[in-house]
Amino acid sequence: MATSTSLVIPPLQFHRGSKRRGSISASISETSTNTPSIPSITITPTTKPPSFPIQKIPEKSNFPFITPVKDRLDYFYFQGREDFFKSRIQTHRSTVFRANMPPGPFISQDPNVIVLLDAKSFPVLFDTSKVEKKDVFTGTYTPSLELTGGYRTLSYLDPSEPNHAKLKSLLFFQLKSAAMKVIPEFRSTFATFFDEMETELGVNGKAKFNDPCGTTCFNFLARSLYNTNPADTKFDKEAPGIIKKWILFQLSPVLTLGLPWLIEDLLIHQARLPPALIKSSYAKLYDFFYQSSGPILDEAEKIGISRDEACHNLIFSTCFNAYGGMKILFPNMVKQIGRAGAKLHRKLAEEIRSVVRSNGGKITMAGMEQMPLMKSVVYESFRIEPPVPLQYGRAKKDFVIESHVAAFEVKEGEVLFGYQPFATRDPKIFEKSEDFVPDRFMGEEGEKLLKYVFWSNGRETESPSVDNKQCAGKDFVVLVSRLLVVELFLRYDTFDIEVKKSALGAAVTLTSLKR
Image (cartoon, rainbow, N blue to C red; front, side, top):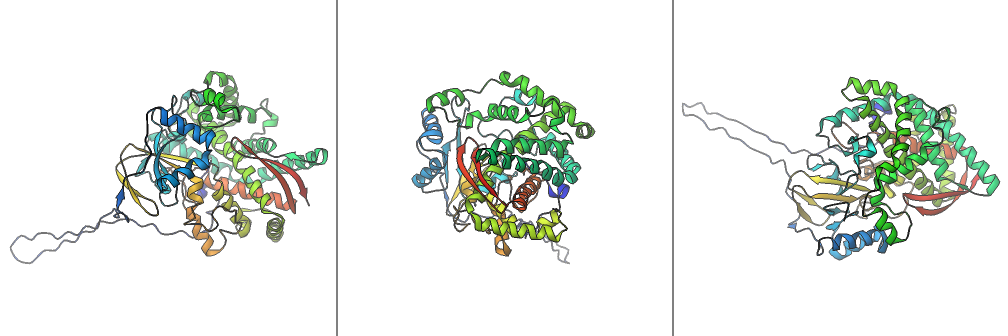
């Protein structure tokens, strides 16, 4: 999920810090004598020396097969993800250490990684001069290419690979082409969604949020990005179910589904699910996107990508990245805002309605820039529960990485892994780091913290380009997240929820919508 704002919406307003760069300077002087002079050259090093003595990266004893399996069971079942990392921080007294990441045997041949769990070390994962992003999108394993038409899609490409720039440029073209449709299509599809929630509440006293929201998200994406209404096609409401299965077949080695642990571990963590089981369903997805993507596929051919490869990439970017991300992000946002209570709800409603009123009843991107509390709430949602929590990279060369208190040497070829929620909830950066603080990013001091919001595989203060791995639709996702909050509080004064856990985030049930 994500995009370059210059192509979709005006640049988001924040203060950008200047980047420090190393420099090399040379001065040459000559005397006026007949003796040949020797040039004087002064060189300023480009690499800043480490702030701390270099230490060995801490790790526990790692026995082949046994330790990776134990770590997998701890991660999924005996400790859970958050306690898995917390316990190892305590054991090693370090936010940088070595561990084994799932799935391990028999899917991943080498699950050992360097774990980064603070806001200072984590951003090295964005630095493509130091880390390679080839085939590390899902970590220490890669899903079968049969699930993507035999192609390595953009998410699995390093910027150094020729197709990376072409495919990312194609996504920028798509987002630019759809720019004028995003707000009206979002408002239309989500107006229907909230009407359905009200009806369900009236009949049953509560309304499940996630699945209807997922259907609405796909309808919105199809209508805004492809100018196609799924209801007018034979595909109709099949898409969310097919996409859910398709994503499961790719991510099952790193998911838990709530089955008895021994059965689940045997079924999905030790072998990949056979792609043949979903081949016919994926073919329906392909047909839908191929028929709906004519102008985008034309553009793909112009820049040297076949229509077939482009279509498989559009499916991945729309269904896995955008739809999959919104399906996690939107329930998590509603959960956080719902739990924050009626006082915040009233403030949001007052701010949003006042701005919309002053803009003649219209919702515009410029108008949303005048809603500082709403913007802060969205950024805080990204901070406290990033929709894509796991990031990987492989060291391109030897280099030194620093946490807040130590420095460590990384060797070429080693895999680095960051669990983003620990970096974006770093108590050395954020006060009340574990709490949802709605106004955290308001004002000049609040805006300075945006550089520590990393959800897009980059800093919030930076923009995606063909040369980096930041989410192509970054500002598109920020925009639709803002639209969800705006639409919610234009309609309702407050709301109540119930929350349960799900495989990919929060399962939210609305128990009231009050006007």
